[in-house]
Amino acid sequence: MQAKSNQWNNNLAFLLAATGSAVGLGNIWGFPYKAGENGGGLFVLLYLFFVIVLGLPVFMAEVFIGKTGKGNPVSAIENLAVKSKSSKSWNLVGYAGILASLIIAGYYAVIAGLVVNYGFIAAAGFGVSDPSTVYAAEVANFWEMTFWFSAFLIASGIVVGYGIDQGIEKAMRILLPMLFVLVILMVGYGAVRGDMASALNYLFSWKADQFNAGTIQAAVGQAFFSLSIGMGTLMAFGSYMPKDQKLGNASVVVVTADTAVALFAGLAIFPLVFFFALDPTAGTELVFKTMTTAFSEMGPLGQFIGPLFYFLLAVAAFSSMISILEPSVVFLSEKFSISRVKATTFVVLFCFLLSLVSVAGFNVWKDISIGALDNPFEAMKYLADDFLLLLVGTGISVFVGWRLENTINSEVTGITNKGLLNLWVVVLKWISPISLLTIWALGNLQILFGISFF
Ligand code: TRP
Image (cartoon, rainbow, N blue to C red; front, side):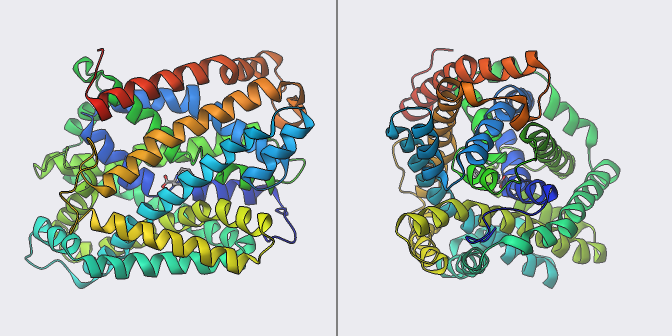
């Protein structure tokens, strides 16, 4: 994926890079804690529903823009706007995506840094310390958190700066299967040692009382976030796709893999949550406290599996982080004709500042709420995941459905069934924009202003 070649040389590269992007903190850290915060069952079922009904179609639409528009998230849209005689202002969708990517990078690096930190804690052994005390001590330390996120950010920046062409493919070939195996092993551990029955009941039962706009918005936001939709990653990766690769088939593979990892993560974590009588609604700290409780219970085995778990989670976060930085880096370097290294330096510096704000949300600014949102970290997360991603997703749907309809064919998509192809267009034209905007409006009214209709 270097600026020179602008093309991957085989079909597997897109699959590996896109899966590497999709599978990340969103699956293993985000999905379980959001499921817990939103009461379990209903959230999970809504999430699965939205992955299929809105996630997959919009995922394909974003890849479509990259593949046919050939360029960075802004220029790909501009190229297609010119071709379809549409207004150039459609590029706002690209700009909004880049804005979202920077905000996400700002808080993502912080959680990833915490993961790396936990890898070392796990390797040293937990001893007799209580996981809650360990967690509280870690996040209270502004400078230590800053150290870890900076290390993570700089390492990702180095890879992005020099081009993620060959490296990511080779790394993902080995690490993705390892991650899958480890997560499945953890599910096995949960089944044997934990309370799997309660977990299944918690995750998959219909809970009508949780049905409100906030839960629905959180489920769509999580579906989009986990699939890396809505900030240009998929446009960038789509533009490196070989000409003959079919985007429909490729998208189904990535979406399936991503969803499977999220579900497995839930099935690994919740049996332990219930077995150790931990609080499923703990929020962002859930994975750190629960998993460390489990690892310390495992004894010597835990001292081996613990660091391995955090290592693989850090790797998953790393390939996602790279894909979060990529869109703004290609955009900057092409727009201002500067080198990739220079563009990366600017982007990393900017993210560094945002990450400082997000770290402060854990300690020094912990009690500074922004409107209805608890602290700056929560505010950044909400603004990116639940606010911007849905808007950009709407923009992508409308642009592809209404302006590029004529250029959609079975050649690019690989969908030979006419009915299916039409269904995709109908979803993009009507179903996706109408439902996304409704969910967005009602969700914001409830979360930001406390106004709810049901
Ligand atoms: N999907 C990744 C995760 O689950 C995060 C991510 C990478 C992302 N690229 C993105 C999220 C683009 C939204 C948009 O951790």
